[in-house]
Length: 295
Image 1 (cartoon, one colour):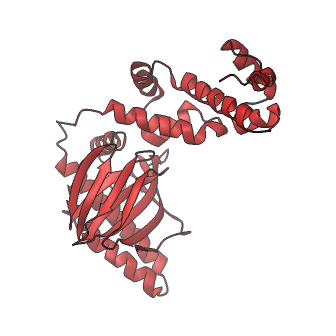
Image 2 (spheres, rainbow, N blue to C red):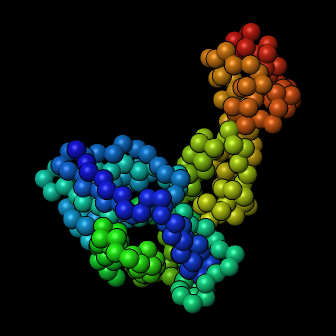
Image 3 (tube, one colour):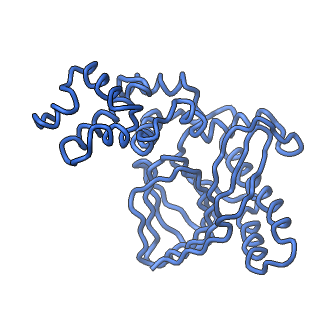
């Protein structure tokens, strides 16, 4: 059975890197064991997976990679991935979980190259099915964070902040020096579509905007709509509305919720607006839709 130890849960560490704001959610250690496997899943935040020891396999949106001690890989928000620990040489993983967004007040003291910042934003907007080597001591810095958190000596939080900063910079450096600035990999539109669809399916009830998604996956609204139109045939807002309708139809047929409760559960502003949407799509009104059991 896997053993997971979290070191920074409920702590409040935020790092600014000239145009990027990074909120650290946790730094955890996963001792996977010989028969550990994590089925397809995704998170709403970025994860940097650093392999401290052992080896295994990860599948990122269908692309399978092997990894070993000294490697790390990145999974972005709403990117589906599956992990398997090697049965003979099981992995121990250091995992840094964080929310990353553009900052309105960048810190120009560190990492102040706009070229590097824009380059890494391009990296964050795309899923790379590949591993990187820890060439700049990220795992050693993670060891220091574990030590500080475990000992909890006076001022340990003040010690952890710069360690986290150096940890993130070291990871950035490994990515940036590995990926040639002049030869960025081709964007994987199919993976981007998967991320957008995952976002819609997990947030439709909150009526998210395209700007909410744009900030999360580092793509402009125009880029998002262009990708969606090319691969799905609908804009983001159109696809969001269609998914709301599909969920409303399901609840109307498989629950006893009132039409107002269905509208609330599916993110419609009112049952009257849901009625208008059904009418626009040439569907029976919600109440009669339930009676006729159409699907």
